[in-house]
Length: 299
Image 1 (cartoon, rainbow, N blue to C red):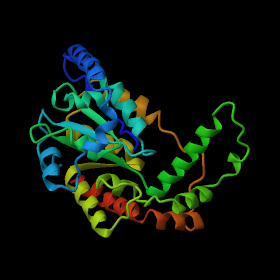
Image 2 (cartoon, rainbow, N blue to C red):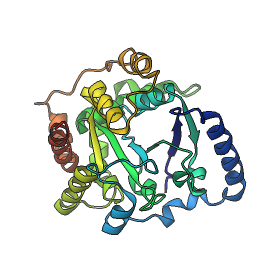
Image 3 (cartoon, helix red, strand yellow):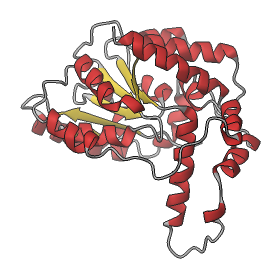
């Protein structure tokens, strides 16, 4: 299977930034030698979020006080603003550690203050009751995310040098959608990751309810269409609103960096919308629930 990408960072919130950099570098150098053969084995040792005890021990509840020993983790859902979030927090002064560093215990070391991962289940197993993971995320409408993914992939393939691709210009979102529907993909990308299921595993309403429960209790919710408002909520929750460079980083990475997609939006009454709405049934339901949670958490 695909190796998970989990990146950890330390925010420059104290005058110990230099010592954190040195400590992380030393740990990572040792880890690179000692654990080179183990990186590909992470998925074989993973615990499941379906186990209540794992969630209770390793994932903090959104209503609980954020302890200094806890680590905020941003769930990076592809094509949902994650790159902008990385740029923003990097702008505020970050020290990066790799997934090898996680294997060496950096998640519990106090050397890191924020993490990015596409795989909540993998990241969660690195923590315990004394050093909990505190999750937050930006969520995008599933059909808009799929359209963005399609156009991004086409653009990337068109940029490949030395390969003649005359047919790519004629590939449509509907072609892409049909290919996804005909594959073994269950269409529930977010639900699958939250409930620790493979994308080829059939999903049930029980899985959907489990995913809703995890979002409700374990995640601070942000929305891509309300990115700056969401970031303000994140920063206030985790105490990052007092960082000196915050306003400048917001301006450079979020306000000025905000781009509008160059492709047309999918018409809600179109055939491709209806196809994707059915294909993404479970993620559509979870997205609607996330909208409710976003309003609820504002209070």
